[in-house]
Every structure is written in structure tokens, then in C-alpha cells.
Image 1 (tube, helix red, strand yellow):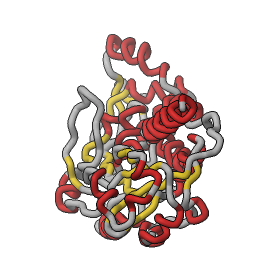
Image 2 (cartoon, rainbow, N blue to C red):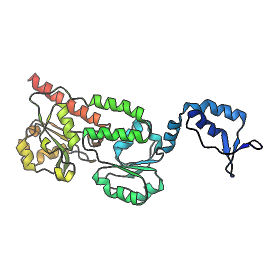
Image 3 (cartoon, rainbow, N blue to C red):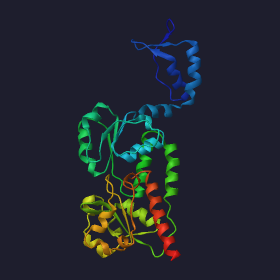
Image 4 (cartoon, one colour):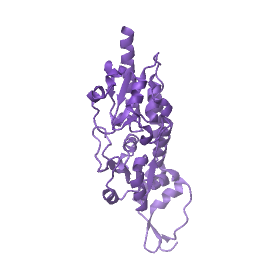
Length: 318
């Protein structure tokens, strides 16, 4: 050591020595000068609370995240990572008193220039619908995480991954335990009511796999459950004749971002013969509660259960 200056040494992988590295200030010549005694005392009180692995994890996790998927934005908000989100999709519904973030995309469209100006270190997308601009963002050099969950199991795995990426596994784990508990199968209704879920009306598209799973868990029978392995919307297009033949007793609908017109169902040719239409058992479920495969699915599930329970009680009373 010369004149109070020590040469830079290789760091030791312990919390104690890692903290000591912060007690020196780097100079332009590559050497480190000790800071004042008072500053060292303050730092020694604060730094040992972080281990080496914890400190490095925080340094390596994304700090400027753009969520083009609403379920990712919702999840980051719930697990305490909202401060790292810098842009969201317009389909994200924030909770009350949440700090707003710039809206940079729809679902099938995105403002790439606006995203670029946000200088994100991670962009999260969802589904094959967003594959084209996910690829373009990668070509522009941005880190992109493209998810494509289609089942409840895949949804849970995706939420687990997102929590790990932002180093919020503890908070994520607690919420995932709640997620599993609140999606537990309900008491079965016998006979199980036949249910048609409509995801789109022009052309007719029936519900995706996780919707079918929720219907089955709630005690209903998805009339197109044999096709639930079809992952793309184009593979789930159905004809009016197939629905008339199945004759659902209940219809749930959520039209991907636009309001469901309940009166339209009765106006369709021949649909006035359907049991669900005759008994006025057509219900809308908000898209953010049923079409975004994330934590909010618990709300869609609760709505399905509530409707089935009401119908079951009404049937018993007669």
C-alpha cells in the first residue's frame, strides 16, 4: 500500500468481502481510494443484509420491461415488480391507484418505434398472434420472451418463469399457491350442463383449452372438449350447424376485446331452438377474466361457478 492507496484485488465470494468492495472509490488509474470512516460505518450497516447471490441477482434482472401481454403486466404488478415495467398493452386493466405506464400495443398490433424509444431490456409477448412483431423486435436487437401457454398447467409454468426472471419467486410462489387453491375443482352438478363457450362471433370460434378446463372444473360439460387440443384460433372455427346439433344448455361468451351482444344469439338462424337461448342462459365473461391466461383466470372461473350454482339451485327449486 502506498500513500493510502491499495491496488485493486480480486473479489472474494462472501457477503462480507463483497460488501467491502463498496468501501472504495474507483479512480481513473484503476486504483481504489478508501472512503471516509463515517461513510464506511453506514455502508457496513446496510450492505451485509444482501448476500452476494442476492446482490448479483438484482443487478442481472431486467429493469425496463415492456409487456405486450396483459397477463404478464398483471403478474408483475401483483408480485412487486411493477416499478420495472415501462410499457404495456392497451388490453391491460390495471388495479385501482396503480401508476400508469405508456400503452405501446394492442393485441395484434404494436408501435415498434415507441417501444424502441423506451429502451427495454426485456419484452414479453404472448401467442402466435404476436409472433411477427416479436421477431421484428428481436431483429432490432431487443431481448424478447415469447410465451404461448394454452393450458392451466402451462399458465402456471409461465407465471413461475416470469417470477423467476424478475427475482420475485417468493412473492410469486405465494400467489401461485392461491392460484391453485382457487382453481380447485368444484362440486359436480349431475347431470352436468352442456356448455358452449364462444370466443369470437365472425367466424364462430369456440373456447381455447384453458377455458374448456375451467368449464370442466366448474362442473360443466364443454360440448367441444374433444377439440380442446387445438391451439390456434383458426383450428377452432365451428359451424352453426355443429352448435345446433350439440344444443348447449348454457352459453358463455367473450369476444376478444369487444362487447358481447346477447341479442345476437337469438337472432341467428335456428338458434331460437337452442336450450340456452330458450331459457335465456347466455352470459358474458369479461375478456380480462377469461381470455388472458394468467392469475386473473381465477375471476373467470368464479363467474362460471357462480352461474352454474345459480342454475343448479333454480333447477332444484322446481
